[in-house]
Length: 150
Image (cartoon, rainbow, N blue to C red; front, top):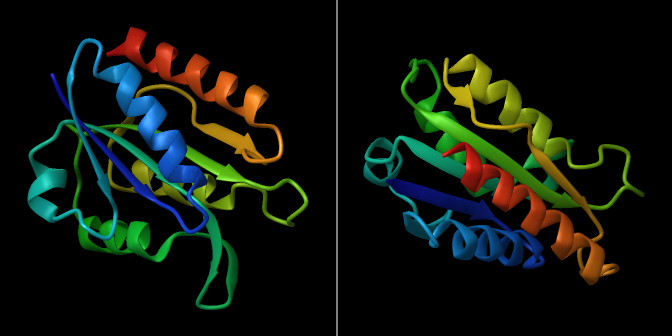
């Protein structure tokens, strides 16, 4: 099965998480790992299963928004229905902020809005670089759960 893993990252934490997830999924599937800024709509449309991760950022004055490149993907898909698309969502954040991993909540609402399916509950990782051992263990556990659902 072909899986698209797309991420938006400013500090590198979502790239790190996306890379870990992609490596685990590659055990059984063909995986394309790509930055949201480099992804094209052909990539999105040609994959039934999409793993999407984003940092939470302040965009257009709204704290807790997805990365601007993730927002661009969401805007490009807005207004259409994609019932055959299956999404798994994740985000790395910091619980000291008002909207901890708010981007994940935005992406989850987006998946519902476009009529797509969620493969499993989203992953929110707190302070990846502050507690690398526990955070990577959490990402690995979620990725293996995802692998089992595909």
